[in-house]
Length: 286
Image (cartoon, rainbow, N blue to C red; front, side, top):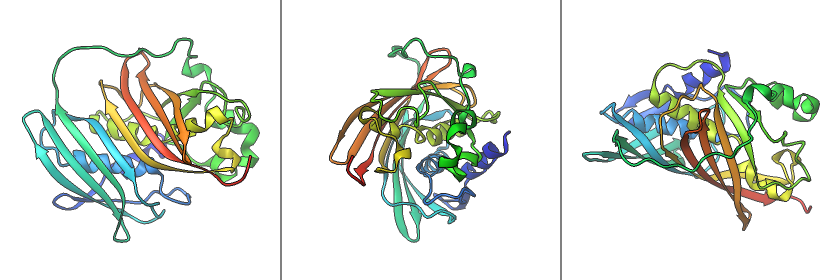
């Protein structure tokens, strides 16, 4: 695996310190606060570690970001085994740092079943990921503006289909499309793939809420933070295969933005749906 991906897999490998209590070690990344995708991925891993039936896989999660996490400090995850039914299991996870809750997640797991099949198809005309520049190549003209962010190791390979966030400033758009995958081969562990996808789902979606306004988080004119995050897992996938993240802005009001994302496998299967609301507070007049 790529060294950055190896670091992510290590982050998701929680330490169990008591029944229903897990500890996630901190990331080595230099950030102002803990990345929300890290907390969400670790919380889902904590919930999954309490599911005794391996045939039960997460089908939905709903989460709230309560406080900014402190970078460089471990996070405790307390799991409440709310219910184990014949077909479904429900878990509540609270992430704690400095004795305070910073994140809350509810997740539901379902025993595999066959049934009706339908999906909304992806938009056509999407370029192949191999034809698109990776993050380092795409952002090379802006490396001075990005500073350390440009050189940061990335466990997720992202390929923007509709230009970089810098290119889109002043050009209102309803949404964006991004190919992504783990930058290396992952073990054959479906829980790990679900957690890696959860981590990656928080990387570009909230930015989409700014696109109709011709703004980008690079502008520094908007204070942004995730408020809540919901995911529905529809079909099997691998997080180390290319996935198309088709994103659309739904609403901005009250200094909040709402965006929806649909994640498709390369062969066109809808595998995950994501909805996220976040703070989009103007810090200076436009």
